[in-house]
Image (cartoon, rainbow, N blue to C red; front, side, top):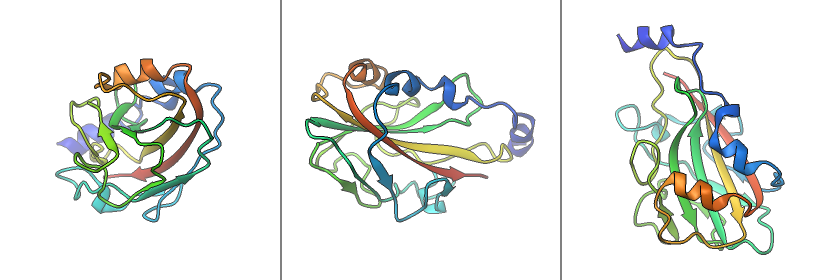
Length: 182
């Protein structure tokens, strides 16, 4: 039944142009390089990184370089631009200490030192891996990394609040895209 629904909705996709990130990232140089040992940019994410009920929901290892001087916080947001909704779905929203240059496999979970999770679109805290509708086709999961010129206050607890805080405070950005299909 869900595969049939996925095929019916195959042409319905949010699209990158509808992302709330497009607005805040405009003008910030894309000078941060984000990589993973688990997949290449544009490549297929491992099944272990797929979400609950589909895979093991283990975050892939990530590393980055190119953070500019003056970085006071790092923000990591994972979105799905192919979800059949009016805008992309934010899967993971995290604020990282500016001294962090990588996260190990499985480290994007509450309790990891130097990482604070904010409530993402589906109300969860921590990594939420791919769970596209079966039959919907390939989904693109973008791992956005933003260098921010000021700390993110502890009172910021939601993705919406974070996006408002980031406006006008981005020093640089980078993105790594992984794909997943069921």
